[in-house]
Length: 141
Ligand code: IDP
Ligand code: MG
Image (cartoon, rainbow, N blue to C red; front, side, top):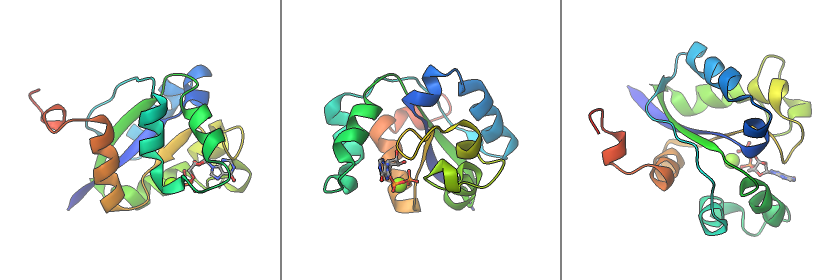
């Protein structure tokens, strides 16, 4: 059965013109791109999206980074989407990411790590809804 995950091309990768290369890797990985948009997250939106991390020491840095410029949220569909996309992006810290992964190729640091990926089916549903209405996810809208 197909399931979904949310990719985000983060502000560091957008500002370095890596959108094209990253989208190509997503395509080549066999994911269906359901939608795509470029947005500037407000502080409120970023704080809501990363609410699970609000007690972490890096939270303020994370919100500043995610609101520093436009990012590109992309809902994806594939069998085993969450796990397969996390394999494609590699470890959170690019220094630990496997060769050939998106973060190994395009991330510059643990915080500015090029892309987001949902960590469970449940969170994927919530994260996709953060950026896309139900209507927007229909084929004919
Ligand atoms: P993930 O993006 O691989 O799922 P999470 O642990 O969920 O990693 O962290 C969310 C984001 O917060 C990371 O992608 C990264 O941008 C940032 N982050 C995580 N840990 C640190 C840290 O120790 N210092 C600075 N930023 C961090
Ligand atoms: Mg995470």
